[in-house]
Length: 390
Ligand code: TGC
Ligand code: FAD
Image (tube, rainbow, N blue to C red; front, side, top):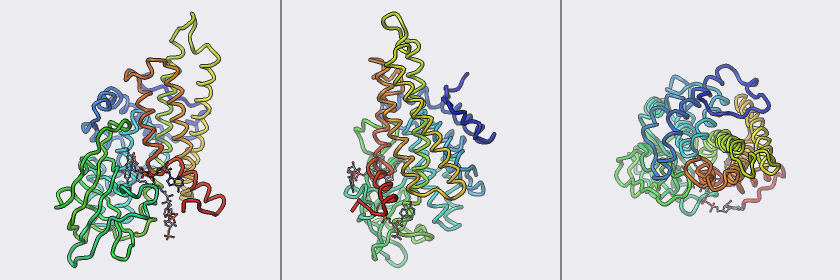
């Protein structure tokens, strides 16, 4: 009774293991206890609640699928997804912090780093003692990251890094940044840049109307000397950052379901209680249509995403399949947020309810990690064999 209501119209719980349910329920209880009561206030103030970092680590929010030998939770992809769902039920900005730390910082160190780098960074990242960010997007290269101009030169005993990244989640407080930059031959590599390196600054981006409880900033590199041992040695080329995005986008597909569920739960409760014209608005056909369509879309998204999780566990999920789920689910969530807000009438625009915050947050989620358009074009290229980007 203490937990959120959680729509499970097609008895999806039957498809989950005891471990999945345990992981999900403890994340759900933690979000209800530690995030929901404070998050509206932090979003209004445009501040990230740093006090939740330790708890995020404890529920497996940092590197859920990273092996335990490196401090991760050693869970499967369904558990990872369920954790993201529960965190985003609270707030997309908190889920962003978790996605970035897990899939965009820990994942590349685990997959593309050497053993020293794994041992040096992963255990601290798993607890949140150390926080990271991921710099791919630049002011002039968002959807087309391959055009990046951030670059590094080999200076014998170190690399010299120059350039700038924009829209970087967690940048203002991150201890390390995974930075994607081109070498003198134009080949993309990942570098671990640490706070405190001379010439490295992270100015905060202000005045966002979306993801207000998440800190966003720039990464500026002005002749930063990066030790050679900070280069991720085991993969280069655009495929390296794109591999991280596969993992993050998969988590976002689950996360969006959480935001949608919270909007649906709230609207359903309100519709049953709010009386107009002497009867609950939920007894009118118009409001029932909205609610019935919401649960239908949530159920379809749950099935799509569960199946994608099974494919990920089997190592079979393709980038294009992940794009389809990210695109479908985020769009589903944003449409549900818009309808749910209307069901609440005037109350829907206030911070008394979570819906407007979810709606505004989802405007970023539908843009970052590949825009709604880009994911459509990835599907288009996959089914026709012809790329329409360029
Ligand atoms: P394209 O020619 O398609 O691919 C370039 C090279 O990469 C390979 N590749 C992959 N490798 C591994 N995994 C994948 N998923 C891969 N997808 C592609 C590909 O085979 C090729 O290899 P090679 O050896 O032939 O060079 O690339 P393109 O330049 O045409 O660009 C298309 C693409 C896919 C990059 C573009 O469509 C795209 O995805 N743009 C979106 C950019 C984006 O998503 N940025 C996200 C920034 S991070 C962020 O937003 C974090 S938000 C915070 C949070 O998560 O909460
Ligand atoms: P653009 O690429 O300029 O796109 C503008 C419009 O043009 C979009 O509608 C797009 O769909 C469309 N478009 C682009 N190309 C085509 C085409 N070929 N055909 C048709 N239409 C096209 N990045 C990081 O690296 N790390 C982060 O941690 C991170 N966090 C973020 C946090 C927030 C809050 C936000 C808003 C963004 C974040 N990003 C991050 C950046 C994000 O990934 C980019 O904003 C996104 O990839 C889009 O790039 P852009 O904003 O430059 O838009």
